[in-house]
Amino acid sequence: MRLLLDTHVLLWAVLRDPRLTQAQTNAISNGELYLSSASVWEIGIKRALGKLDVPDTLFDVAVDAGCRPLPISWTHAQAAAALPMHHADPFDRMLIAQALCEGLSIATSDGKFAAYGVDLVA
Image (cartoon, rainbow, N blue to C red; front, side):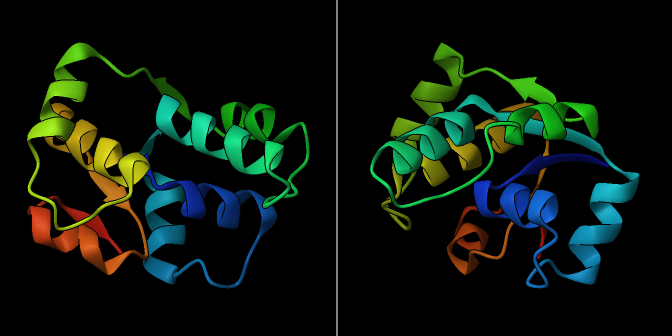
């Protein structure tokens, strides 16, 4: 399974948070993992605002675990802009657009993603 990690799922996996579901754990263990540039940006903003305290090595750990970077392309940006407004969070909208454009499943616990018809691992 080609799996895009939602930002919170990445954090839960790296920090071994018990909120990570068994289905997500299994998919992460067996999947081809992708990490969006949008998640890197989101984490950076939250760290700068003091809303998130994560180790500086977070992305090194993700890469060491096999996460592949998923840059944001113009196609992704256009797709995100064209999505219906079921979800207002711009970072999540970008992840949804990337998953739809690239044929990826998304590991998330955000129920709003289902409205977009993307394959979810919840």
